[in-house]
Amino acid sequence: MTEQVRILGFVNHIAPAADIEDEIAQALDWGVDVIVAQGTGSDWGPYWLGSGDQVSANQAANVEPYVRAALEHGIPFVFSFGIAGGDVHLETCLRAFDELCARNGWQPRLGVVRSEIGKDYLAAAVADGPPVVPASDGAGHTDLTLADVADAERIVALIGPEPVMDLLARGVDGVVTGRALDIGLFMALPMLRGIPTAVAAHAGKLLECGGLGLSPGDSGRAIWAAVDATGFEVRSPSAHARASVRSLVSHTFYERAHPTLEENPGGTLDLGEATYSETELGVRCEGAVWHEAPYTVLMEGARREGYRAVSLLGVREPALLAQARTWADAAEAQVAAAPRFADAFAEGRLKVATRIFGLDAVLGSLEPNTTVTGHEAGVLVDVVADTEELAKEAAYYAFIRLFIGPYPGRKTTAGNAAAPIMPVVVPVSEVFTFSIYHLLPLADPLEPFALSVETFPRAADREERADALV
Image 1 (cartoon, rainbow, N blue to C red):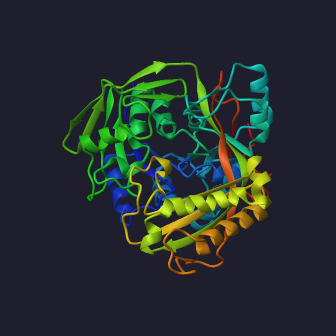
Image 2 (image 1 turned 60 degrees about the vertical axis):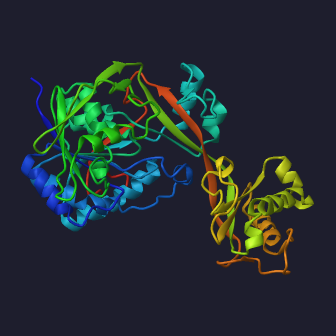
Image 3 (image 1 turned 90 degrees about the horizontal axis):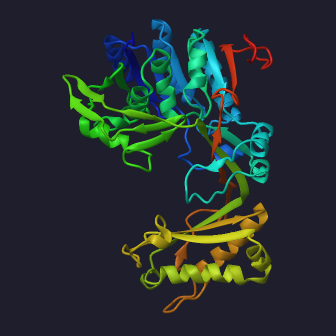
C-alpha cells in the first residue's frame, strides 16, 4: 500500500527568513519525512560553470537550522549544492559543510552524487551512441560533436531522482548532490516509497522553489506538502504567508516553454487536467499525468569565449541624451574602424557593445522606445576580446570617444559625460557561453555519475573517506 510522504522544502542558496525556526517547528508538528532543498541552477549564466568559481559557500550556513532539525528527529535530507553544480563547486560547499558538522559535533553519514560528466565518457557517447541532440529548437545548437566536448571547460548533467533514490535506499542520513533537476530532488523519496511518478513530479514542481510558491512568494521561506497516491496537500508553515490556488497554479508556469507540459528525464509531466482546491490549511492538488519517454538528462557545458572589460559613463546633458543611441553607435563604429582593432573585429576576436541604462540596456534592439525619457542615463561599454589586454585597450578607446568625442549640437569641448568610477576601464572576468545544452540518452540513470557514501566531517586527506566510491 502506498504511504504518505511529508516534505519540508526550501531553497538553500538563499538566506532563510529570520523566523525560520518557527516555520521548521510548525512543519515538524505536522510531520516531516524528508527535508529537501535545491541549490543549483543556470539562472546566472555560464560564468560559474566555466570558471569553476563559486558564488558563495554560504549554502552550508543556510541549511544549518534544517540539518539540526533533521538530525535531531532522524529525518533524511536531500540537497543539491554549488549553484553551477560541477565537482569543484560541490567540493567547495562540502568543505564548508565539513566545518559546519565539526562545529556542531555532528557526524552524519551522507550519500554524495557528483554530477559532472567526464569528457572521455561523453566523447564515447557522441562517437558510438545515438545522436546527442539540442535540448530545444532555436537554441543555437546542433547535434553534439567531439569538438564541442573538447572545447568545453566543464560539463554537468541535471541528474534525475534515481541516483538520490539509490542512496536513500542505503539508509543514509541525507544525500547531497551537484547539479540536479530541481523537482527530481523532491521526487526521490516519494517514488522510493511507491508514490506514482506523476504525483511526485507535480509535487516537486510546486515545492522546488520553497516559499516562492506561496503568497506572498519568498524563497527565504519554507513550504510543506503531504504527498499520497492520488495527490498532495500544500501548506505554508509560516504565519506570514499562505498557500493559495492562485500562488500554486502560477508557479506551475515557472521555467517551462509549454503552459501545461514539462519534459523531464524519462517522461513528460502533464498538468492539463490538474485540479486545485482549497482545504482548511492549504491546497489539495490532483490530476497530474506522466507520459513515459526515452530517458535523457539535460547537460550544460561552458566554453570560454574570451575576457571582458567594461567602462561606465554618466550623461545628463540634454542635447546628448536626445541622440544617445547614435552617439554610442558612432563610438562603436570608430573602435571597429581603428586600424589597431580592425583585424580582431574581422576575425571575431573582439566585440564592443554599449548599453544605455535609461534607454535600451535591458531589451537592446527590441526596445520600442527610441529616446531617453529621463534627465540622465548611464552608459556601459561592454568589450569582449580573446585577450585581457585587447579587451582593456578597446574599452579605453571606446571610453575616450564617448568622453570627449564630438556630436551634433555640442557646445563644450569636454565634460558632457562623467566617469563615476576609477579606473575608467575595469577588467571583469573571463567570458563563457553555454556551448552544450543537449540531452544525453541514458540506458541507466546512474551510469555517468560518481556515487559515494561518506561520513562528515571528512578526514583532512580527501583520499581517506569513510566509504569507498562505488
